[in-house]
Picture (cartoon, rainbow, N blue to C red):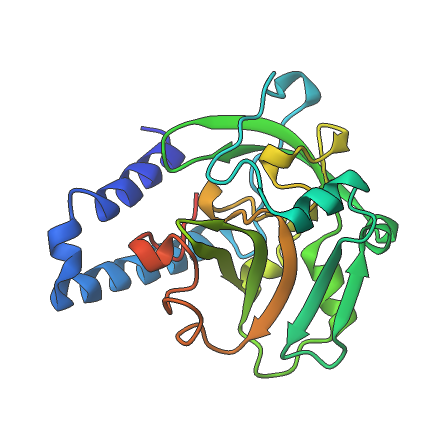
Length: 245
């Protein structure tokens, strides 16, 4: 079985067939230990900066489907979309020396990275797309992280089931060269279904980690007091926090 498919199967098992085990205290401890082992093993075997496979334009999928939230039905989002997101802002707050408020123009003026990668969903589908945007590391260096910073929390404009969508990664993935804040897909501005105007691409992890409709980055030392305390919308509902692919 392909490694990404195997990991997707493990994630599905952990959130489905193993639900009764996971609900127990012992099960939670075992799953947490397994997740930590997987993260450390992947980084040891492949290297902290090992790149996810990149493809050619000939490999790009004819259609890149949306998943989860594919449209935002709020007056604020509709107004922003009507102006091509001219007034959209991405804030950088928390454990930083220099909080930032970035416009779309600011983001486009930063050094850009373009990469053609495969998106692997925990539901079992994949698609290849060309993503463009600044490296997250560039933004974080501009804000200057404080010594106590450990995680980047991604705030989003969408909700699922009435709860705010959010995600988080640690500093290893945050400073990985393929981790970008994408504003373009296949040479055009992001479609709404794919997270317009900004989304995270963290290429060594499964699709649910790639937060869409980004409004803010919050740099924190601990995740336990944020929403459900597990570091992400789906993690608060049983998914693994580290979804290395």
